[in-house]
Length: 279
Image 1 (cartoon, rainbow, N blue to C red):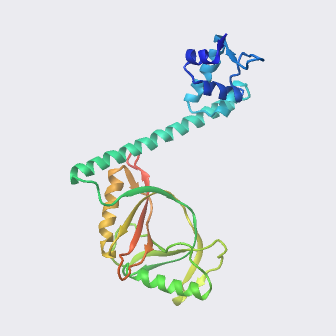
Image 2: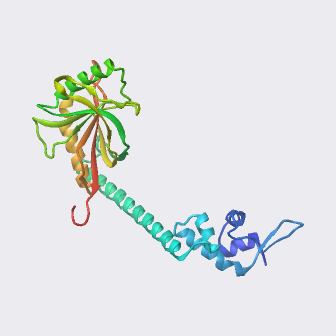
Image 3: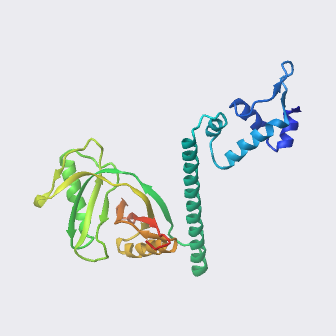
């Protein structure tokens, strides 16, 4: 038999890991000296240790490994466990490939411009939002401000407070400068359950705004007149990084224009990876 330190050298596993495996019941010492407390292992335990290491390398948790070693898993559960792990690893590979594509796109930008880009695009998920919203056709984007002002006034009248900065969702399937299909959105507390009346028979309707699994996001600081240029930057990023637009854009008005400050707008575009078929 070998002391734990010598066994550690033979199997190339740290003593701390061997002690941890013993505490979890995965690989207990063959013998523990009752007087000194020294732990001893035998070479016959190497196959079990190698199985632990092999399963751990596949990404299984130590709890799952323990169940496998104790034969507590049926053949169907065993297949399901490894299929689930396979799916996790495939997603990790896809995530790393997407990250690699973003690095490659950044390198192309630097090579073309000779410097880091001024505006950064990030991928983010957006949770479900409980909102009051009104959707209508407006002549130009400038009318979003008028709708917001009216909506804020009605909300104050009914004692309803927004819980986040206002948003606008642009539902048109193609770019247009006039007669735009826009939804003005105001996030509110879950306790708000009634629609609020607006002028002309319109209403601020209560609804849950669907979450976005993956959105390309960019922050625009400056005049609203510069928004088209920022949209162009975002669109180029989406194409260069292997994504496609998967829904209407959202604008979140983080900060309005002030006497000495520019407006701050976050633009979000839902995106999906482009498949090999280009869909």
